[in-house]
Image (cartoon, rainbow, N blue to C red):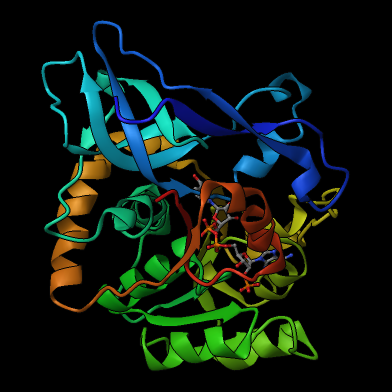
Length: 329
Ligand SMILES: NC(=O)c1ccc[n+]([C@@H]2O[C@H](COP(=O)([O-])OP(=O)(O)OC[C@H]3O[C@@H](n4cnc5c(N)ncnc54)[C@H](OP(=O)(O)O)[C@@H]3O)[C@@H](O)[C@H]2O)c1
């Protein structure tokens, strides 16, 4: 193996409120040797995802490297399906070199898209958008889809799938640049800046003058309050995430329960983990959309493993734009 060092980011302090760099330390560990059935991956990209924030509330994780999805190249294999140099995706850790079971790794095709895309648009974030809408959205052409955190890794794919399926699509994002991207590049029919809108309910109503049939919910909190009042008869609320409450006590968010009856609404949470087996079906469909220019994506790429802790905080301040990855180099 080429390097004796394996820099790792470990979790050392539970954050109270917004996560900061002091919750992490960087240490130098050994490069692991694979046992039978295992492979060693030299990570090229690490995925930084909002769900990781909940792992930082669990003191049992103190002292451990942060777990996360990685894309990289095999540098040692004792699994028959993998050879040195293969590009793979796996659940690894925030480290330069990850040891994983070969059965849990999968090849990625870097001829279809750059390797980093397999952490975003062709990875589990894309699958999250696709599977949530497919299984719980019951999309019908001509209806209106609303997406919160719409310029993000999941939201941007959800909105574009809505357009591909023939819906009218509206959404919100946290900067004017992001809103412009939704409107000018992704083909959203309406979008607004949720951080500067003086009245969120009015902003949603203006963006969706006929109401919302499907809400793809990524944010919760005040954004969701505004969306809920705009739901139409028969509407479906697909609860993907609630990022507004990951760094603070959940704000009680109790919609008027009577609306579920009078408007025949449904509200359903889901986890992409329940749809992991659909990843190949998703990649096949999404790769076609990428090739045809129907699916576009953005990434924020941060250089160096030591940058991961500070970059992670950007997910909650909205400083990322699209999928946030670390280029381990
Ligand atoms: N159910 C599942 O299986 C599953 C799987 C993956 C992800 N998710 C969820 O999907 C959502 C999006 O994840 P992602 O990976 O695509 O992240 P992302 O949208 O790329 O990045 C997070 C974005 O959320 C927005 N945000 C952060 N704090 C906010 C707040 N207080 N109020 C409003 N917006 C806020 C920011 O965008 P703005 O600049 O637009 O504010 C930020 O850029 C998250 O809630 C995540 O937990 C769920």
